[in-house]
Length: 308
Ligand SMILES: *[C@@H]1O[C@H](CO)[C@@H](O)[C@H](O)[C@H]1NC(C)=O
Ligand SMILES: *[C@@H]1O[C@H](CO)[C@@H](O)[C@H](O)[C@H]1NC(C)=O
Ligand SMILES: *[C@@H]1O[C@H](CO)[C@@H](O)[C@H](O)[C@H]1NC(C)=O
Ligand SMILES: *[C@@H]1O[C@H](CO)[C@@H](O)[C@H](O)[C@H]1NC(C)=O
Ligand SMILES: *[C@@H]1O[C@H](CO)[C@@H](O)[C@H](O)[C@H]1NC(C)=O
Ligand SMILES: *[C@@H]1O[C@H](CO)[C@@H](O)[C@H](O)[C@H]1NC(C)=O
Image (spheres, helix red, strand yellow):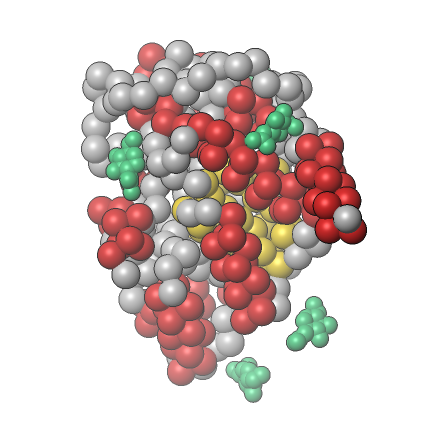
């Protein structure tokens, strides 16, 4: 009896909160590779959208949002892989009037380039972090740790990274830890717990989805995970993967936020804080889709992950 009551309450509370607003919610911006679809870029920043920040895997803001101020739609720069000009680029953005407060370091350094990673050895990454990220931290900018994959080798990579910093004479300090996850909710929650338990820092879930599942299972995962992120104090921000059409999705059509006509799917509408319209994802790759496009580059590593 007691058990049944609490299950009902839990269900009710997750329904009630699924459509609420959240200052944590942002956009992983994966620009459409088809120039006919540029209007897809603007759906995320319409007045009724709940998204308050974005990243695009790059140091500079996207042209699609260059007319949005940092206060309207906060841009978070990323050092994808080593570059000698990252810190000066960020300093340039700031002197140009853009109030950058957070940056992120390295995308999936433990993943291969073919699956969207930067395939970076921890020693090289440490050298680059010391040169490019530490000076920004001295200016008060908060830095996200290298965004490793959800595979267990991510922990090994980070451990090697922090030791490499120390052997190069600097303690690299991350203010928050980006998490990537493709899989079910149980696995996601357990992985987040492990990251938090290991590093005791805030988490940003910067790529996540339940890939290649039925629509109802995908939507249930989406609702449950979003409610969890909104409720959990140590989750500072999150960004769902992804912001592309279902027919070019590398995570299966049902996970996408746009259908083949560029309309928001139900997940897309819920993510923006709106009511569903019943737009169903459409399957199959669009003509002209190129492997190795921005979408393919951005997608995380399942091949490696399943192979483990
Ligand atoms: C910003 O530019 C885009 C095109 O790049 C346009 O669609 C949008 O309406 C503009 N937004 C504002 C607020 O000016
Ligand atoms: C920059 O943004 C932060 C966080 O929103 C704020 O605390 C700070 O006052 C801003 N700085 C400037 C110069 O606007
Ligand atoms: C790095 O951190 C360790 C442990 O907190 C400390 O002993 C060491 O002095 C620090 N090294 C530098 C260069 O700050
Ligand atoms: C975790 O970090 C908080 C500060 O954010 C600190 O108060 C706490 O003692 C830390 N816990 C552990 C187990 O290190
Ligand atoms: C997900 O949440 C939406 C919005 O609250 C709700 O309408 C829908 O029924 C939920 N779906 C599932 C599978 O939980
Ligand atoms: C998921 O679906 C996409 C496209 O629908 C496909 O390219 C990919 O191989 C699938 N991945 C897995 C792990 O089944």
